[in-house]
Amino acid sequence: MRLEGKKAIVTGGAGGIGRATSLAFAAEGASVAVVDLNADAAQAVADEIRAAGGTAVAIAADVSSEPDIERVVATAQQELGGIDVVFNNAGIIRRTTAVETSVEEWDRVFGVNVRAIFLMCKHVVPIMAAAGGGSIVNTGSGWGLKGGGQAISYCASKGAVVNMTRALAIDHGPQGIRVNSVNPGDVDTGMLRDEARQLGQDQAGFLAEAAERPLNRMGQPSEIAAAVVWLASDDSSYVTGSALVVDGGGIA
Ligand code: NAI
Image (cartoon, rainbow, N blue to C red; front, top):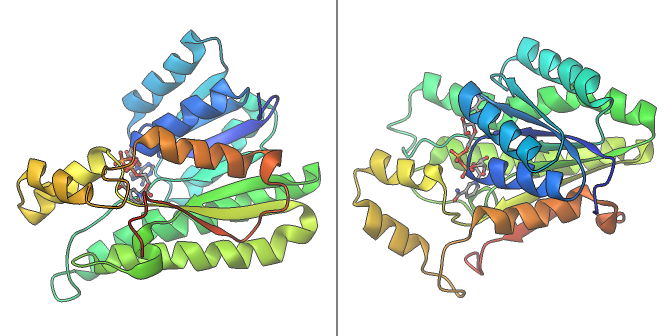
């Protein structure tokens, strides 16, 4: 029970990695606020946690909106009794080059992938600081470290996540708040299938290509969740500002 008594917010908590991490947090003893744009799916994850004997609340929200973030933080604080851990994980991808990307799409990707993390930290850091500290984990991507093709807004946004994480760690370390990014390779979630659709590619072929890496398979959401549990817990008490890569060896 590495998160016994901790209160945690998970954004994108209804999706592949977010759901797995919400369940893993709860299994380690944390109370969890499952935040997602998809209200029904967030409720289903909270119900799953409660059915297993844990404590969870579902909060429907668009994390790119400041009023929504303020409501999420207030609700989590009220329902859980504090906030010790935040997993800023909601994300979207658009598989387009610079030439193909509209300003609206660029802004949407940055709104969800970058602004949301800034907003969450803006509102949650004072609460953590007043309580003596906390752990924030942000989902970057292998493509935020090395880049990738036909995903200009996504690669730029995830690069921003990695460096914003370092800046947050510098600013708030003295307040006892650790901030790290987890950077997955290809993980078997709805996002990968959506990418195949966006690129007009055969799904099976796309997934087979995603599995081409030293460990010879895609990652599972639970394998990212395991890394996030470690970063969230006191087991990583001297780790901050780091970019942890969890990718089956896919990033050279
Ligand atoms: P997913 O599509 O299964 O889950 C994403 C979740 O975020 C969904 O439940 C969605 O409803 C939610 N969401 C989207 N926009 C939102 C918004 N504005 N407000 C609140 N919730 C919102 O995708 P997956 O794979 O679980 O992705 C989670 C994170 O992992 C993302 O940040 C993604 O960029 C990152 N990632 C995923 C990789 C993969 O191969 N699946 C690889 C590297 C990074």
